[in-house]
Image: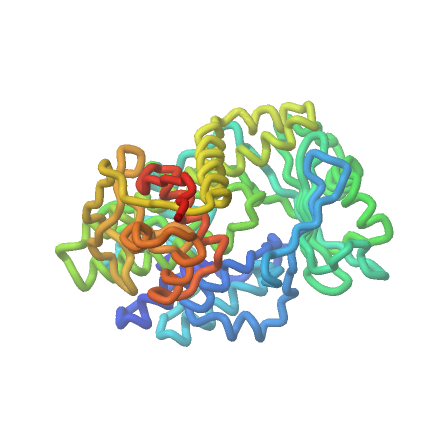
Length: 468
């Protein structure tokens, strides 16, 4: 295992707990300013799965309640996480030791070093998981990395200290702002400290030239409105440090005895605030795929192909989401930074969302419903995760979803298809499903039901039923 970040620690801990001998090689800690990370509440499920919840709770991280956003507008949006959920505001320098201690407690042997790709493979491990993030020790050496030409981005990161509380409606919030030639975000690291990252393109962002790094950084913050106001009485105490934040993917994520995990395989724009969660999820899936290949040799290639396909799908999904966000801001900022990044085709995602929204409106306004499986519905066995293994299970397949679908918003849609014809009222169907399965939130249930109707896997007759 190469790399002691979220992806490497997640995969290593699981594999060790499942009885495998795991050696994790990680680089020594760096004294440089850490990149701040905002972890959404949904990552809590992964912390629970990995047995990390208690350690995260005891670490004393600031628990975020949401975001304050100026995006293509001078008006702030205050976005609060649903149902009172809270995320975590962290830095890599504080998070990684927690994860590495958890890995060691699970039975992982940890070494410090910087092996080359050749040295890593030469150790003779049954599997080598490259979890080295952007360094991509094996992915780069084998020429598997592919950069997005339109997403060349550098993050300039500094930490600020204020003598009085920062003027934010909610001091736990991540603050996000788009401006003329870039975008910026800030997370609190202590009651009186905030990290601010500026996302710029060195080719187009009109950075100040022939000046010190601090002067360039300060000049860029001065172009913002909200963040410039936020730090007007604050002192820059650390940094800035420059980080390459360009987006990339891989031509393959698994081959023979090598897997690219987390940011070693792909990196998405921090705009999604999903980086740590994506890395943890990738580490979990890599652990499951590797465990399956080790204990069931007949499933080896299926497991590796499944991992590779899922990693590619996740990157494609978030790339489309990022392009959509950037396109929204591009309407307010006439600058190449925005135009170059918003050219990707986001119409497919928009069309799908509109179709699901239309199906939701039909379901919501119907006095009663009559649902039946479509004659064209195809259900075939496809690989899927079950506990700690990849198994073959029935899934809905189509020309656009050859890998198949079984769950939407944590709702088992095959079960929902079987149950739906027996009910004429959505609340009754929801209650029956919740009794038979683990309870789900009503919005998630409605999303799953709307997705079935939108994709014409369930045929909806929403004409009102009258009785004499």
